[in-house]
Image 1: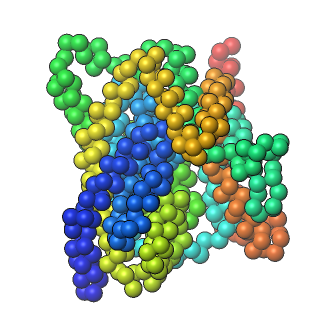
Image 2: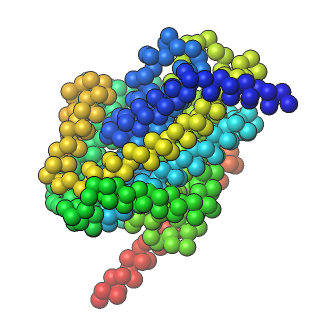
Image 3: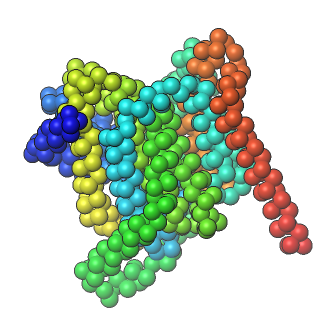
Length: 516
């Protein structure tokens, strides 16, 4: 009964005009920031952070929290339309979203993306509302060796699900891991692979690397191939004879069809959302690991797993449901234990600390209306995101119909500006171009830039938790495999990788024999 009264009090606070306005502003701003390559939800939260200093705690946190899911979805829109994830967590969305766009089903893909994101987000919020305390306490008990093992398994899963040669995927992932160790190591107190270049002292910046490998390389590929992004676009061919109203109605029909296609696959949605919530509970694991795990599981259990990576709706559902589910789940350890589940969650934690709010188990005791108010506001944010995404996504689809001679320079300009916005440094813009050329070269040679990015992002996580495990074990370098749980995870991942590599070699030999 007491909990019911607290929820009703929290709901009353959320339904005030000020808080509802913050929800709408946060969602719209987050979506706009999300569709700009190189920015994404974290940058959006950082930009709005100064505005919250003079605000009351609830509207301040609600504003920033609403930016997060909307920004992630906005990043998925560009991942679908131009193969450029606005946020690293949308990387897996490119696997099937962009192939759908190239065959003329871009708006359909946006409908699937929107519905999957909303459902995953709502389920995650419900988990945050109902089971946050017990789940967060379990997550806190997970040691550094287990987190290291999960991250390593994530690399293996990436290699398996990546398009093309698994061996090349393994090489690209290793290259990404190597790039991640460039710069000053706070653990070891030394600089690594900087070669005397001051720019590299703090490590290779993530935003220029991601924007370059995805956006610039995609612009170069478009110019190399010519035409437009869509390879089969009946709408463009008929556009001269079709009114704008009919085109918009047709796009809304495609959006509706995408939403229905998602609803018709409840098992895929629920399974992927559950994976996203489960992994999102682990501090440091994040939505990127959740995406690849969900995608691999979806591909394994799907009757049409061989279609994953070619524009499969189930593949898109697996990526997006887990994506937004993990996004909200990262707030569980943040609010209940004071352990941020990610960068955005860490910023929200900072806002609460500035407001002198004690975060942790006591948050739900001392200020329960605030804690549950944030959760309920996230629920409203997902509902608002449904209307914003439905209204704006089909309009943004116009960018794929523009000739590449026009869209490619636009992508380059946005990418360079996005890189510059990272630290307002011209060197970051140069880095964007350098990584763009590298990404284009890799794609021409059959190596996946996605694998590089994933290895680069996971590198610091793997190193940090490996060193923590070693320290906790008194310097034992084999600490990550001495405990049964991490040893089992790493062992299973290794067995699966070897099995898949053997299968690939066998298939290659059979194809060569058939060719003879």
